[in-house]
Length: 157
Image 1 (tube, rainbow, N blue to C red):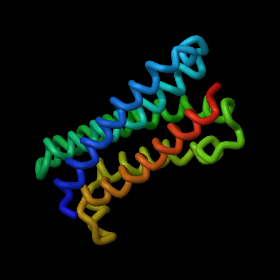
Image 2: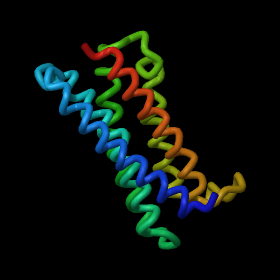
Image 3: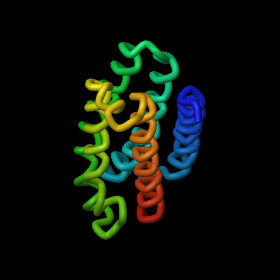
C-alpha cells in the first residue's frame, strides 16, 4: 500500500473514531461524576486523536521531513506523557484487563515513534522507508487504543 493512501485512510478512520467516541461519551454522563472515569474517557479520546493528528502530519508533510518529523516528535512526546499518567488509572480501574496489564507498551511505542522521527535513517537499515516504519508503529498504537476503548467501555459502571 502506498504510504499516502495509508495515512489518508488512517487519519480519516481515527478522526471518525474520535467523533464516534464523542457520541458514546455524550450518553454516559455518569462518567463525568467520577474523575478517574472522566480521565479514562479522555484517554480513549486522546488515543484516537493523537494517531489522527500524526496521520494528518504525514499527509501534509509528505516528502518534507521537517513537517512530518516535527508533528511526530510533538505527538510522541505528548503520547508518552499522557499515556504514562493514564497507566495508573487503567490498572486501578481493571487490574485484570488485557490493556491494563500491558499498558506499559503504549509509552514504549511512542518512544519508538519518537526515535524514528528523530533518526529516520534507521528505518532504512531494516528495509523500510521512515514513514512506513512510523505507519507500522501507528497501527500498533491504534490497536492499543481499541483495546483501551473496549476495556473501558465494558468495565466502566
